[in-house]
Length: 354
Image (cartoon, rainbow, N blue to C red; front, side, top):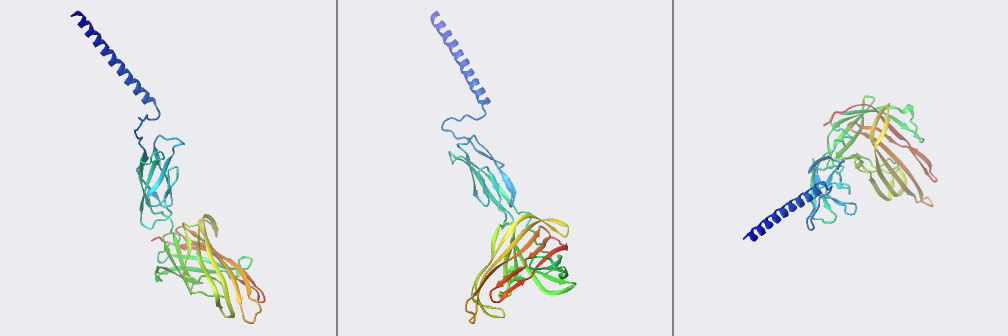
């Protein structure tokens, strides 16, 4: 009987020691996990991935840095993707909002994936709001701009004797060929001039109802032309091919091509009458490759030339400067002639926003 009592005591003591060692082992593992910089994953388990913030408001044309919490290394990078909506995202998680919104606002979803397991992912919502800019042509009735205007010679020098003051006032809001337009009436020396300019702005794009080219031999009717894109870098303005077209007032037939393209230089500093502006500069270049045919001439006459028009737009002001360079055209047999240019510099203005 004594033997069984002793045996029971040994079993109890062994059990108590086992519990002690087991508790010490659990404490040791807990301490190791607490000191570890990265979580320890059991084989077969998935590590969680978290993207922050869960929602962000980003103006159009801006960028936003997103963050991802996930244990990864250079050999297993994360994958970022815009899974719904506009915009783009870099490999570093920088979301790039579109430069212009058609709607008043838009929404995108950006998702981050594990490159080793695409089922491990997390997403965030991006709310894109309109950019405050693009008001490079304030359209309120009664707005006006006063410019000094010079003729410039073949060397692009201003002819001082040609100086005039032009006042442009928004007087009309017609609809022309489906476009909601604004009409600017021109006044010179206080008298109304029979010259109305029409513009229409749709988002970041400004159109003008104008004659396509300034060339004495060829005449085209007015049409809407894209003269400015405040988010684009370059675009086509006008492109036509002539095939035995009539020349204005001359017994010639004209063949060839006329191509006008435009480029935008953002944030260009420009000085106008002592004032410094940060502008969006647009340059429209028109290239003429022309052949003149006449029955009495033994061979066709071929020539080419380029004209350039530059316009400086300033946010919430409008056009502060414009310039059409002069051009010289040399035509075999007929000789050479020049086309004068002009330059306009803003003197004063009165603008209210819509």
